[in-house]
Structures are given as C-alpha cells and as structure tokens.
Image 1: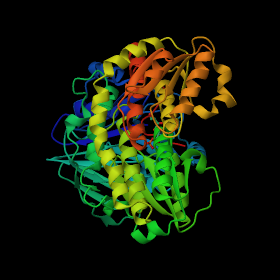
Image 2: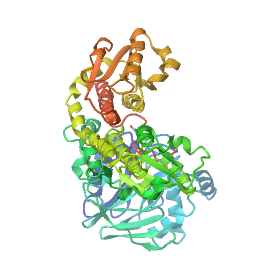
Image 3: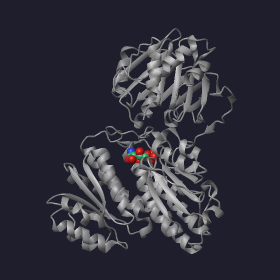
Image 4: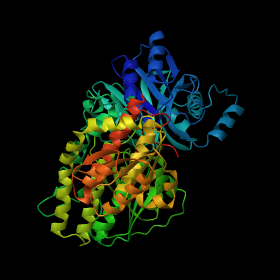
Length: 610
Ligand code: AGP
C-alpha cells in the first residue's frame, strides 16, 4: 500500500525520491507527492494518479534541495485527489505517512476546537498538526516534536517528517508499518521497503516498532518513543539492484514467472541433507521435542499465500501425520480461536507485513502457541513477531500478482513437512530422501515447462474475450485451481472461479453451458480417473475444456479443446508444476487485453490495512 521514500545527502533529492517511489509503485497507489527543503523553505508538489503525473508537475516546478520526502498514497481516509495526496503540511512541518491513525476522529475534533483548519480529509494531516503544535509548544527539536506529536496517536504508522527550521534532517518513526533506513556514503535514505533504496545502498537498518530516527547526511540517531537512545545494527542485503529491474521482460510478472526455478533452488540451497534424508532445522525454530509433541498445526495466510498454505496442509498431514488447519488471516482474526501451548502456528506471507495475518497470529502467540514465519522479506513484521523464520529466497517480487513467492513458499512448506515427519518418526530416511529428491528435480522440470510458454500464449488467445472461466482440480490441484482463478481475476479482470473438481456436481455444474471455458488440472496421479470423469461431464454439457495433462496422456486428446502438457512428476511435487501454465495463462490473457499487469487496478502488493 502507501510508499515512503526520504533522502538527505549531497545530491539533488527530488530525482532520487521519484526513482525510489517508482520502485515502490508495485505496492499500489492512486496519487503521489514530494516535499523538498531547498535551504530556505519546504516546497511541495503533489499529483493525482501515477508517478508520470507527478513527474510532469515536477517538470513545471523543479525542486532543487538536497533533503526531501516523497510518498505514493493508496486512499483510505478521503478519496484519491491532489488535496489528499501526501506530503501534508502544517506550519513549517511536512509529513508523509503509511498506516492508519485509529483515533483520528477525536484528534481531528480536538484540533478543530483549537482553531485548526484542515485542508484535506486525511488522518495524516492530523499528525502534521500535532507535530507543528509540539514545535510551537517548545519542543527543542524536530525529533522531540515528533515524539510529543505521536504520543497521542493510536494505530499503525510509519512516517517521515521535514521541518522548515531544520534544513539538514529527516525524522522518521515506525509503529506497526514497515520503515527501513538505508545508510549510504554521506547520505541517508528511508523507505517503506528495501527495493526503494537498493540502487543507493545495500546497508540497511530495520527500524523497530516505537523507534524514532533522525537522519542526516552525516549519520543516524535512533531513540525510542520513551526517549532512550538505541543502537540498531545495519544489515548487508544480498538482493542486488538488478534483481528489481525488468531485465528485458515486458512485465515484472513475466520475469518473475520465469525466475521460479531459481527461486526454488535458492530456497532449498544449504537446507537439505541429501545424505541423511533430512532438512537442516536451524532457522525453523521448532526443537525436535516440540516437533514430536505437537498437538496441531495451524497455517495462517491470505490470498495466494493462503493457497500455498492449503497445499502445505496436504504435505504436513501426510508426511508428518499431525492435524493441520488452514485459516484465512482475515477470518481468523474475527474468531475467538483457541490455541494450546503445543500448537504450531505457521504464518505464510510473501511481504511479511499483511495486517490480517499479523493480527491473527499475534493472538495465537499471546495464547502460548509457537509461531513460525514463512516470509520473503527479511526482517518484516511477521518474522519479527515469530519464534522462528524460514525465509523464501525468491528475491524481490515486484508484480502485484504473486508468482515466484508462491512456489518458493511451497518449497518452504514441503521442507517443514519433512522436518516434522522426520522428528515425529513418520518418515524414514529413505522415504524423506525420495521426497527431497523429487523436490530437487522441480527447478529443471519447471524450466522444461517454461520452454513451452509460447504455446500457453496461443491457448490464452481463446480466453481473451471470456467473461467467466471455471477452474477445477482435485487434491493438490484444488488449491492450484483456486490460484489459477485468482491470478486470472486479479490481472485480466475476468470472472473466474476455482472449485474442487469433486464439488462440481454439488453446484457449479449448473453454470456449464455451450462454450463456457473450463480449465481442468488433470495430471496422472491417484485422482486422475475421478478428474477425468469431471472432464467428461463438462464435455457432455458442451463446455470447452482446457486441460493440463501429463505428457503422453492420449485419452485427453479426445476430450479437451486445448491441452497444456505437464512433465511427468511424482504426485507430491505436481503442484509446483501445474501452477506455472496457469500463471502464464493469466499473464498472456491480461497482456493481450492491454492491462497494467504489474499494477492491476485496485490492488496493493502489501496489504497493511484491515
Ligand atoms: C497475490 O497475487 C495477491 N496480490 C494477494 O492475494 C496476496 O497473496 C495477499 O495479499 C497476501 O499477501 P502476503 O503473501 O504478502 O501476506
């Protein structure tokens, strides 16, 4: 959602800030703005719409200072408009903000009673007024004023602030929303995530909740909200700036689909013990004793990560023989769920910042459950909250529609299942070895599949004008059907439904009529015959079958209008492969329709609100 970038150093700030905002575009936004201190005063330029509009506005009014803050806004309080775009200015204070001020109604009324006239509908402007009032009320410097201003703010926030009277500093603070400081040579940056800062530095300090940081060209000072000076170690990030570039692909999403074999290989690297049929437990944070005495596993996630979790359940139940529940973060936080000390809760999240998932797993942790994070973003909120963190190593995922993080999550979940299965005495060394060997084969089988991407593009031409598409699958491929439908609706805006193939007779069969496209995931496996029966039922009602079938499956020729061939692979790892053509299908349909594939309408990459 909203993105923050700040710069202080020897270079002209505006182009650096706009470049950083561009790298945060994927988070989703509807307006943008920038404030620069030019040595005398703070100049603000804002624009409704995409960064192109901001750049045009900056063309008319170039900003020359070496200190500034910028923002991309995803509207929550107040419609998308130039007036509601950040930065918001009160007196000599400019603020950009990510998050929500929960007590905004009472704070706004109180400020209005004291004579403040608001120029926007946002909760952020309240923060600007509070900081301005603190400065007026005698705060000795901006850092102190931010501390005083925030003392009455409830909710989640990350902010960056400039003051007219301190032309060499940015003050940044975080509580519940991510904020990273990049430490360059004689320059400091801050940003909502590391992708915004990578082209300047790979040395990052991850602020903790309650931190207030003062950034100047010469250094960084961090205090807590209570006024105590704290040291935060800087971390060297191994993502290179090139990883966040499109690298010759038309869209990030297409590049990321093609990066999946590498993302999986990287996620497995150094974590498998192929001599003893095991995985290295270090980061999992579950002791062998805890693994043995587990009562239940909960997998908690949203969206695409939820689909990965659904597949994780099949593995955890069959390889570790422990009851496993899969929960949507957004629903679980509405329930008064019960946890026990011997429950393991696994939060699956690409961004590690999804508000709904954080809320749900925090409650579980409070009740004593052990918390494991599977996340792609280093030091993000969910890993920080958890007892252990198993990072997927997919590299930066910029396309809003998640692809490589999904298959990297699958790799992590399968490793967890094997780890638990071995500790619990369910899997022998040989059985575990068989699973891990199959997993190691996945990257090359995926490469083989990706070699046929052009064929999927031709299949996609049949779906360009489809308004409704049904996706069916069984077992491991039921979540894959859900994911195929989600991908298609996210970026092509067609109505798509994923269903368990066995449920078809219980309702969705009523939808099938002549020409309705039905994508059936039907590789050779233990449920093949049943799924083939569903293919026949669709055909009998004159639906148009697009089948995903195992190479050499002759029976499918007579039934399906289009067939996308999958490599022959053990059932357990088939979902890694069957999802790839569905990602490509969604991509090519959306690209053919001319949609903004990487930033589909209304969606944000990191959903930091409820
Ligand atoms: C994926 O294509 C979606 N954009 C979305 O469903 C996403 O998976 C969901 O918001 C969860 O995000 P997370 O993995 O960062 O927690």
